[in-house]
Image 1 (cartoon, rainbow, N blue to C red):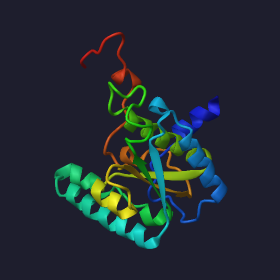
Image 2 (cartoon, helix red, strand yellow):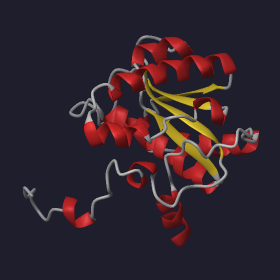
Image 3 (cartoon, rainbow, N blue to C red):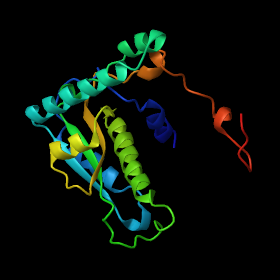
Length: 208
């Protein structure tokens, strides 16, 4: 039991720590099987995984992400701008492997059990698969970095996803030199982790 909690607490969004070494095939299969074992609404399993290793594709995505990072940086001023300038979003080429996770809302047919009242339940299922992958990778000693500075249409076209499949995540995956004790965003002063008490409510929601 303690090992599960240890993995949860060691999980990090990694960037600068990637060594560039390849992920052994058997290890990659284990973490993908862990992702594929995630719970899904109506057993729809609405995820797809595109493995990207081509240096050309990695560079193209990195250039796109760098441009979007600059767009975000241009909206910041003062202390926020200074703090953000210290936070790296690299890892795309350094990891050597990108796992693009897609959401296919047509998976499972037009009547997915349990999704009729919550249309986003399928999307939540994909997030469960991503978390499974992330925890399995951590247990295997790998790092994972979730890249969020991208436009969905660009990434969809880059990896050839059909128009109805939504690219939910680009995950940089690979061996790392180490995992930081403190998450980067906390270490660089972007945000601090809140206490459980600050988000816990009893019976009904209470405004803070």
